Image (cartoon, rainbow, N blue to C red; front, side):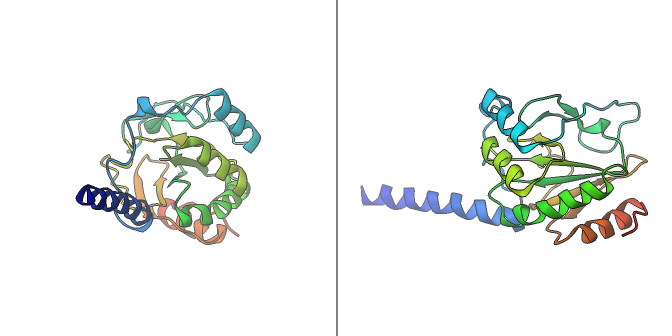
Length: 205
């Protein structure tokens, strides 16, 4: 009896450790259920998304596929799903989840970038949350209104894109090439520097 209790506590401790190390270390497989187990479009979630004022997701047109994984993701909180290879550059993709402290911290900076430069550079979030309501509540709390896709089974982060930590950015250039960079920016200006460096786009102050 005592042995099984110790085993149970050890497993619980491992799960907690995985939750925290996934913010700054390797991505952790097996934490999320299959996509069919997680609903990201329900009346409750639609209401949360509307309350947060999140922009609609765009399906895109795959006239010239980029180097993103050949996957289609549902819009977090309802709406059109998005073909990742149809996202036109220049674009910034932010990978995050609600329980990750650096993810929460950088969202206002990403929103400020979106407000200032969204007409020239697309900004899209991809949440791997298995509790989509928490993701939407965080978006509302931080004022993040850029489009949000849902990847609760980590199909993108587990692909050849090789996202190893959270938060992370994927930068899609106009020619469709993709580069991955660690996230955790402290300001909109820092993200501007990354965009200019990774995408060759001159944005100015």
